[in-house]
Image 1 (spheres, chains in turn purple, brown):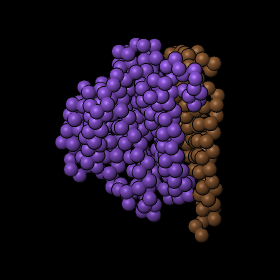
Image 2 (cartoon, rainbow over the protein chains, first blue to last red):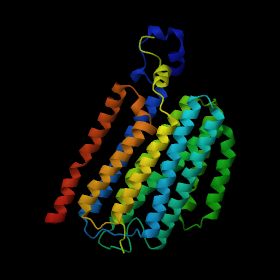
Image 3 (cartoon, rainbow over the protein chains, first blue to last red):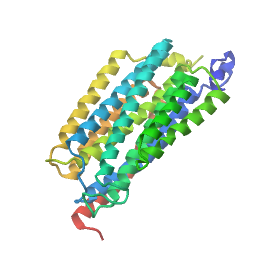
Length: 252
Length: 107
């Protein structure tokens, strides 16, 4: 409604919108601020544990650091493709914007896959939320690590689903369901991703509700708002990567 | 309109695509520095502050250029960022206690 009002000739009779920006954009900024505090609390809790425990485990060897560096490259590059998508949409080149968003989704999906590999390796080494094989006196390592990185992985997954809704609309639903089936059936029952894959099913259900009950053609503002969310997910990783991985690098 | 429409405001301050590539390159370079520092045998608290400093520079680049905050009006920048920075800074109060535990032990 606010968008309609802003473009209406009668808008002269009213005050300009807050910060002279679109209400959807402002709404996303407020969400980002609240989510920043959630991640801020988790990061501070992790960092507190890290620096107050001299016996903190150092489980991340060179393969882990290399993998996490590639994941960082994926997310930074996805932010670049996203911002180019937003610029293309702003210039009215909607098909180019869709291509950039698809590239962003591919890089985001690559990040999630690599992170799953990282988690699986650590779980096989014996890491659980309650104990770790490297430092018996620091049982909170697993809990803080899985909570922080799991929360971020969930945000990336939801971001990919969100971008798919904006870029592909209803065509995204069957793709998402296929991805859910593949992720569910191809992971062993002992893996957390066997059940975690159901996030894709829940995402498909919510996306269907949005796309069928309130269908619309997403415009440049919608793409910019989705871009804000995506950049936020990238921004959070800029803190998780150094504080979790680089602060616990195994130097051999 | 006396204050200009949001679209007109945005169009007046559109960043150039080349700028995004420079920011992306800068972010990659800062990441490479962080990875190098990760392999230096440094005291954890010192390492934490250096890495946090670099991460704050990276997040500022992302917020200003990728999230377009640089191109928003000044009041929006100040209101949103001041509130966020103050709240996050309040959380750093716990670091003093973490440092105390290292030097004095758990009481």
